[in-house]
Image 1 (cartoon, one colour):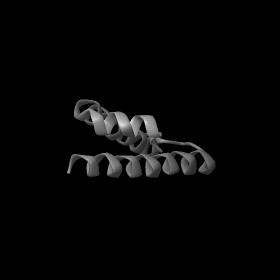
Image 2 (cartoon, one colour; image 1 turned 120 degrees about the vertical axis):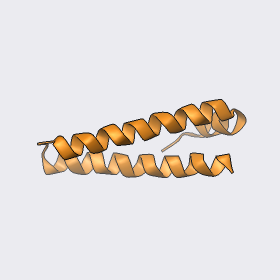
Image 3 (cartoon, rainbow, N blue to C red; image 1 turned 90 degrees about the vertical axis):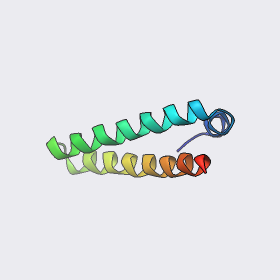
Image 4 (cartoon, rainbow, N blue to C red; image 1 turned 180 degrees about the vertical axis):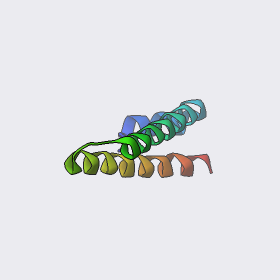
Length: 67
């Protein structure tokens, strides 16, 4: 989840917000590729899927700031 300082910086500076969005989108894409190609244990896959879910929630917050 995004910390309060990051949220404040993203509200105050659209450039920071847009960079954060691109970084999270890239991280999600990479994690999904890892899952598809992975031979990880179920526990590791569950952890990675939770992180993707958290990242998607962060993206929603950032997208709402653009409105």
